[in-house]
Amino acid sequence: MAVLTACVFVVGTAEWVMVGLLPRLSASWHRTLPAVGSLVTWYALVVTLAGPLVTAGMLRLARRRALLVLLGVFTTGNLAAALSDTFNALVAARMLTALTHSTTFAAAMVIAIALVPAARRGRAVAAVTAGWNLATVLGAPLGTWIGDHYGWRATFWTITALAALVLCAVAALVHPPIPLQATHPGEEVRGLLRPPVAIVLAIIVIAQAGLFTAYTYVAPLLQKVSGFTPSAVTTLLALFGLGAVGGNILGGHLADRFPWAGVCTLLVGLTGVLAAFSLTSRIRWAAAVTVLILGVITAALIPLLQDRALAAAPTAATLVTAISASAFNLGVASGSQLGGHALTTGLTLPDLPWIGALLAGAAALIAAAAARRHRTPASEWCSPPADVPPGGGKRRP
Image 1: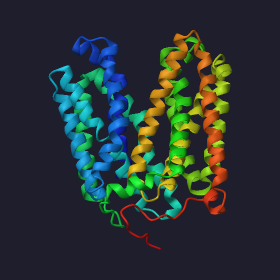
Image 2 (image 1 turned 135 degrees about the vertical axis):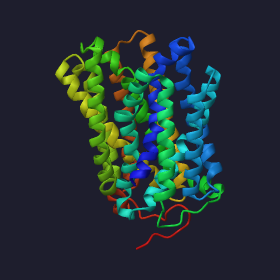
Image 3 (image 1 turned 30 degrees about the vertical axis):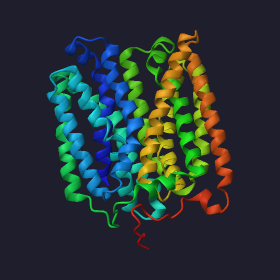
């Protein structure tokens, strides 16, 4: 399980570290920040649009073999980035890396679920998604530090070495007890064509959009409204990450015991915290507490929503995991765009959390309606179904 978490950690680090490397890349390639910022934009677009297609194409491979292939391509892409001699070559290397993003996450998730009893599925999901939190809290800052001290190429060399190490670890240590064989893409696609899947994906997109309407601009909000220094803002973002680690554990336990109740409660909490942030952002200590709570809630939602997506499409676990990852990215992009548009229309930074709260409230209403539909039988409300694992194998008793 730790190796699967490491898979997600190294892929997440490769995505998030680019934000911290933009100033170095701008100076290295003699391009403006918006120009090098396209590396972030195009990466997200490839993950969102191409991720599900790549996953569908990989369904004919057994999950462990698919994960090994994906990690090999990922390692090659980062090696190409480290060796790139032109900006366009770097862009191409990043696009190659982005193609592996969603499917690596999906394959790791499906294998992790096969390693545990059905009643512990939520905690298995949380173990894998913990890799994203660790990438944000540890991987991206460390990669930025390496880039600042030894150059941006050193960061990519480090990621390449870590990816190669993880690849070897998967080959040596990851052996699912249940055969996770190839499946026909048509079977998983049919499993996605169910209303509950669309509802869960809608909740993910709207909730993430609400969060990132405010969080995209949290640094200038904390500086210009709360009055924190840039170094203090860095500390507060680390506090957000610390809360996210605890929230991830909380989300895993809630997913195993009270999945829909947990989703509804946390979305209501997210709505309230975002609404309060418009006021607490004006008081330093209150802003710091709000950031910590926001980290807990947002991280706890990730394994819960991922678990609900898996429960909605039990026969399409790999593809629905990849599509839900795309839904998270779509929510991030939508929220960032909405926040930026709000600022250009004359709204102020403290207005953004209120806008995000409205979206989070809408997601909470959708989740409440979905929860009511799942209250019969009662076990659907209190615990996830012991569905058949992907690949057609039967769970061991």
